[in-house]
Structure formats: C-alpha cells, structure tokens
Amino acid sequence: MKCMRWFRLFFFSLILALPFHSTAQRVPWKDVPVDSLTDLTDVINKIFKKNTKEKEQERKKNRVQVSVFPAIGYTLQTGFAVVVSANALFYSRNPKDSNRLPTSINGSISYSQNNQIIAPFQAYIYLNNNKTILISDFRFLKYPSYTYGLGMSSSPEDATLLDYKYLKLHQYVAFEVHPHIFVGGGYLMDYYWDLRQVNEIPGHPTDFQLYGDSGRSFSSGVAASFIYDTRDNPINAYKGMYANVLLSPRFKALGSDASWTSLLVDIRKYVRFPASSPNILAFWSYNWLTLSGTPPYMMLPSTAWDRNFNTGRGYIQGRFKSNNMIDLEMEYRVQLTRNGLFGAVAFCNFENFSNINTWVFPEFAPAGGIGLRIKLNKFSRTNIAIDYGWGRQGSHGFFINLGEAW
Image (cartoon, rainbow, N blue to C red; front, side, top):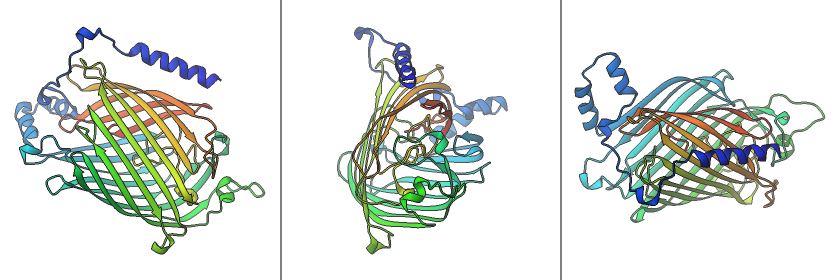
C-alpha cells in the first residue's frame, strides 16, 4: 500500500509537470536546424578554441555519424564499471531515401567491479534500396549476477548469485512487403556454460536448483518476424511507431537441449506533447511469452533482459523472472535548454510476471524515476542518458545508457 501511495503521488507530479496550452496555441512543432543546436563535440571544440564553423560544416556533410562514450558507469547489477560505448548511423547517399531510417550499429565493452565482462554488438543494416534489413544481436557475457527466484512473490533477501558465461548469436533478415512493413526470419543461438550457483546453502534449494538447470544450456532455433516501423530515427525518435512481433521456436533437431516456443511483442509510440513543443511523450509495451515447452532457467523472461537491458528501470536486472512477462512503460522527454544540450525525463513502468508455468498474473510491480539527458551527437540525436529509478520493497538505483532507453 505504501508503494501504491508513492506511485499515485508520482503520477500526480508528472501530470502537473506537463505544460498544457489552449488548443488555439497548439501548432505543430518545427525542429530548428540541427547545426544551430549544441552537443558535447561543440563544447569541446569551443574549450580548445578550434574553428567551430569549419568543424561544423565537416560534421554536417559527413554521411556517417559516429558517437563514442568512454566512461565510468554504475548499475545495480554490475556496481562500478569501466565502459566504452559507441554507435554509428549511416545515412543514404540517395536524396530520395531521406525519409528512410539510417543503418545503425551499436557496440560496447564493459568491465565491472564484480568481474563481469559485457560485450554486446547490435546492427540494423539496410540493403537493396532499403527494402531489406539485416538485424544482428550478438553478445558475450562473463557475468556473475543475481537472480531472485520465480514469480512476483520473491523479496530482495532471496538473492542467489549465479556465475556463468554466455554467448548469444541472433541473426535475422527482413524484407519490405509494403511501405514501413517488413516480414522475415532468422536463426537464434543461446549458449550458457560454466553455470553454477555461488552462495549455495545445504538443505535450502533455490528456485534455480528446483527448476532443474545443469551447468550448461544450449538453445537453438529459428524465428519468424513482423516489423512495422515509421520512426524518424532509431536511436532517438521524435515521432512514429515501432512494432515487432517475433515468434521463436527452439528445436532439439537443431541441437537445442529442449524444444520450446516463445513469442515477443514489442510496441513503441512517440508523439509531440504538446504539439507546439519539442517535448516527446513515449510509450512502450514489451511482452515476452512462452507458448509451449519449458525454456532453460536462464532463458526465461526476466527484468532488464530485453535487447538493451532496459525494462523495469527502478529494479535490478533479473529481479523478477517467470515464463510469461508483461511490461508497460511511459516516458516524458523534455528539452531543458534552447540549444538542445540538456534535457530531462520522467518515467514510470509496470511489470507483471505470471506464476511459473501458468497464465495467472498476480500483481504489477510499479516503478518510476527521473533522468538527465546530455546531447553527445546532435546529428545522430545520441544522448547520454542518466536515470535514477525507484521500485517497491526499497529498490532504487542509477541506470545509464548511450541513447534512449527505447
């Protein structure tokens, strides 16, 4: 009850923060020319008294926009970490493709105080006059981390430390069948090894042990994908919608330890609010369901185990886990300075995980928070995102990204 009172207060504060205007004053916002904005590169050039006008023209003409962010970061699961993140946008040479999304490539490598190595690589590569997309999601993790059991009834005191290594190779191809609509498929491989529970207590088996996982798991399967995408930018959308429906059966015939099928439904929407402002109201629905079979423990839907580790900000990664997950999120993004260098966000989310091996969803876990945005690259719209979130049972902490959470 205390958590719900806090959350009602958060929603009330968010509503008060929205700048309302009369309908007569609402005219569609027109973005100012990007070269009149300021980002960290501009700030650095001014500090070192470089020829900013010349540098500006060079950057504006560049078809490839690269952002690199070396930093010391912190998350609830990793503790302090040394991180180097980078992303690149490749714009088409053809002026007729100006309304198409640019190719995007993202990668990073991190080493944390908990002896974790995190190395993801993700790419959306547009080919064949933007009618074909190659989608890659690769990562390697050496990742001692905590899990908290199954369902929604666990507490922070149920933390179990698991040590393991993980290799993920997901490769898709999608073909345009109608403007903004793509269908396709791919191959998925997930391999966990050297998997063991660190803080084992004799006579007190954990959900991890009761579920029946061994020291390794190998999952291999195919995927069928439907994508609808009208966003104006994949890193930081100002408008449009994104929807991805991904059906992923895993088969013993392809080497998988078990046969099972999952369904992912990922929907995002971005609108100007108010229409006469540069501020964005963003919505996200992320639903990860098990349609048949029994996935390995490590492959069950879990908090912050989405593509970018961002669902459920306010909770530690892995806080909730089961075979079915529903996540609903909303974020209000505000430009703080006229030059676009600084921004802020207020966000909230609700997660719900079913009782294990059922379709019974007992309760939602609410969370919310605020964040700061610093413009790293104005041409690709890349922000440094620093958020602080709160959840129930005293959960709270920092969440840092290169780019927006979704």
